[in-house]
Every structure is written in structure tokens, then in C-alpha cells.
Image 1 (cartoon, rainbow, N blue to C red):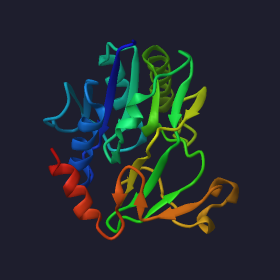
Image 2: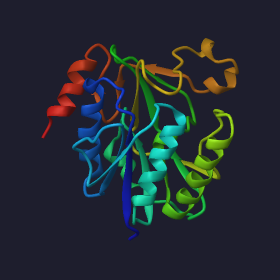
Image 3: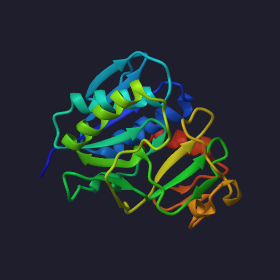
Length: 226
């Protein structure tokens, strides 16, 4: 059985009503997988290893944080986990088949804060749902950080080569005022409608229950659950 660690990264700009439940849920979902916490600006009392990085909020900082976590890891496999995503335990049952591929969990819904309305598109790949062997991740993020220091940032930055998997139950990507990427809440908002393939909307999600109309209560329940 290969060893595993979670690279958790936070910019410390999110509403704590979102971030704290996400941390509690990640610890619960991870079960016995160690968490390396990489925090921007301030130390937080979270993680089995804790790293603090100073710098400006933005995509470049996110990549530096992920790289710092990978450098600190001694595991065979790493999962990259964002601070405003609710991870289901089934996310961490996955193990990569190949050592030279980044695997994306595409079972993820976006969920709008504060009303809890949820939306889905097919095959949505995000860096917050990546699992890979540490060596390929270390190589990619090292090169990406160097590139971003020299060149203008672009949005085609997620790790490659890639494959997809789908956990038994979905993760929830909480969308709010401080996300790095823009959320779309209608197929009409997509410039290329092919990117809205499989569009669905919901207020209740499998493995999580009812969210829409009670999002604050839902998050507080996750935070306080034993």
C-alpha cells in the first residue's frame, strides 16, 4: 500500500463560516491520511505539518503553496485540497494507476454561498481535486512556479498529463466572493456552450443531503459534527 498525504492550501481570505467547516470536514474525510497545511500569511492551528508562506494573494501564490507542501511531503501519493472545498470521504479511496499521470476527480458540484444553490457540468476538472504520485507532482509544480515567475499568468495552468476518475459521492466546491476563478450559474454564461455539457442544477446532493435554503445551517452542522 503506497503512503499518502494531503496538501491543504489556504489563502486566508475566505469567510471563516466557510473555511472552518471545510477544514473540519477535510479532517473527517481524510480519516488517517496526514495533512500538510500550507497557509498564506499567518499560522493556523491545522494540519499534521504546518507551513506558512508570505506573499500576495493570487494564482502564483497558490502554486507556491502547493509546491511547498509537496516538498515537505515524504509520501508516495499526494492529494491537493483547497480550503473552500468540502471533500467527501469517498474522494480519498482513490489510488492512481500510473505514476506519470495526474488524476482529476470529476464528481464535483459547485455550490453558491450563501443560498446553497448547486450546479454541475460534465467532466469538470479542477486542481482542487487532483491526486498524483509525489514525484510527478514535484516536477510539475517546480517547473510551473519557475514559469510563472518569468511569464505572464494564463489560465491554462492545471497539471498534465491527466486522466479522470469519479468518486462514489461528490465533492462540493463552495463559490463565494473570493474564489480565484469565476463561477457560472447558467449555460448562457458560457462563451463556448460545449463547456456547459451535462448542465444540471440541484438543491440536494447525494451523500450530503439538502443544502439549498439552509446552507449556513448545513455548514454549521459539519463544523459541529463529532
